[in-house]
Length: 304
Image (cartoon, rainbow, N blue to C red; front, side, top):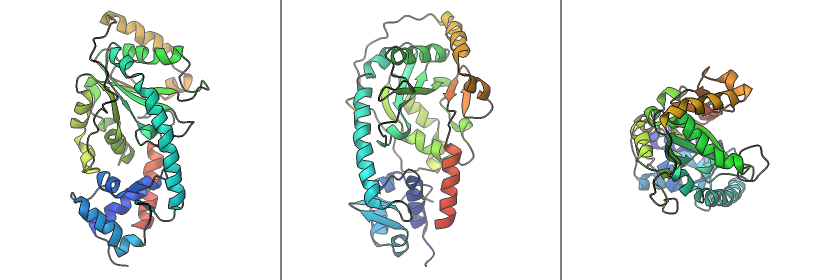
């Protein structure tokens, strides 16, 4: 077998990453989400390599304009799964759109974005609607309270048995938009997570600042663009109707810290899975970043 070019290796790395979730991708998506190329490549170069590279023909499977790594599920089955997940994700986004105005009105909340499997339109009926929330400095606990309250009252939180539950387990203030300190070594998941966030509300450009303050992501994903708010997500520009004196923030903090589950209290601030501070609230008990990284590295060693 010929020694692969940098472009061929980058394409294989990209397909390896998406194989971890059995997610076939188009040529456009291969180019958009290309992982660690030495430099940027044109779309035409990617298409030619996918269709004509002898090296890649031994590594990839293709069907209906989509590509996937060989040795995984048959690509026809992967395409069927992707179509089903897309339909489920569209239902979840429809539910999320109804809440855009509510998020816009919440005091202290500056931005809300959909993440994880929902950001990839890759959910199933059991998936949560995972949201990332940015608040004003000094308002993270009150911002979390007001964000979670409507879903708690309606029984739409995880583990309630209701369909399409809302999971709000990651909050930061605008002082903590730089995410590199939360990363593992070679944290590919965090890089893809940041670039894949789907804006729902952004009152003051906080999500744009998030991307500006995390330029390190471009060393992994130089082609990935910043996603913009979809026109169906943009609510009316209304002020928050709830006046909230900052002197109440310690009360919101005290009440919520006491109500944290035991496992969160035990794991808090021991590593980057669970962080509890006045600038970051990250409640990822089942943080799979290390699993994805190690599985990716094992597959990369086998195929590259």
